[in-house]
Length: 196
Image (cartoon, rainbow, N blue to C red; front, side):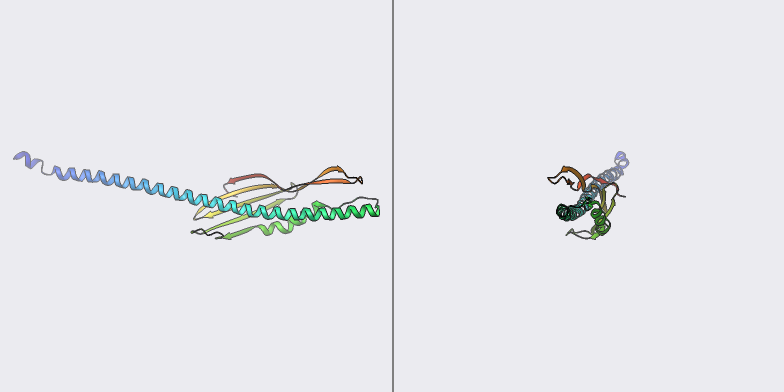
């Protein structure tokens, strides 16, 4: 009988220890699950932010390329008219129109208009936006585009370095006048960055 009274509290203590261990295992499992859930959600948000930035870059590159193609066609028409007039009038000095001047006019007037911020441009459920910052360097014949996509707190930036169209000599034509070739807009670098 004496032994029974000595072990009477041990069931309560053992039950408390087992309950505490089960509670710790449950809390640890729940914490791991929630952390994994937040990591997956953050990765999903980050991916959507990246695609927002990439969409903005594609929109801007398409607009610049389209504008430059129109500019090149206009320049080639002007050059053709000038050459026709030069041949017909037999001028002494051949001074064709300058493509660089047309390009510089385009860059200074149109590129600043492409800097943009759009809030909620797509049908995502969360708030989102993208920003585009464009700088051009006429001396190096380059355009730098920095696009940032933001989705539900996640932020991703993309940097693109474009080479502007360049005029190259391509021999002489049948009238002994210089022929030219205009190299198109070229994507030199395209990469994800931390911003700035």
